[in-house]
Image 1 (cartoon, rainbow, N blue to C red):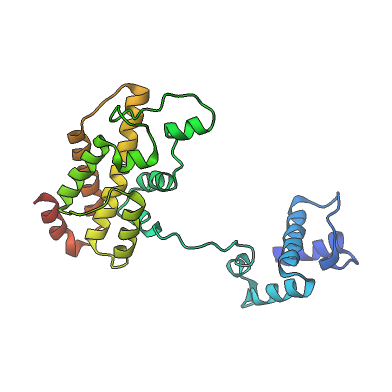
Image 2: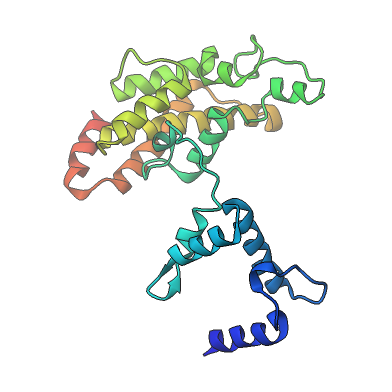
Length: 247
């Protein structure tokens, strides 16, 4: 009843004798009515004509109701699928690890080289190895300290011949993730946890003067990954996963 009354009110006070599809936004219009007209104008612009906009609305109506998800597709900007997305967003990866992983793989973390590009004059030296300059490529995983941690993680996973390129690793994970095997989830969780731990260690040394060794980071990564994987693994495979992790 409310919706019918609202429509009747809009027809009486907003539309009156005008053509809705030709209406312009006026000063006395409410914010909600302005929004409706803005969407209408955008739909006309995208379809190229009033007739096209009307056809889109007609196709978006199902069972007498407007399906917003269908209508949204006409406003959404199409984009190519991200090849590494499944390597980040899966149940075995902690949300905070996944979020940081997205920033890292896109090169959007505030590394020293990025800060210098923005005009901040900072001596560019990796605080983890204290030798080379700091960049995303260096931290993940060309830095000797980071490389030691990642090598330890790979040994724990009993995996060899892996690259030290984070983006390539994510693409490899995404391909194997389709099988939804717990080993693929284990690897993606371990990679994300390693990236998170290295960045956390970097910030701890830089801002709090707290320094930990590679063994400490490795044990923490093993603990976090093990707990998370066992939590999301189907009960049928829990014993198999536990035996693998404890071997």
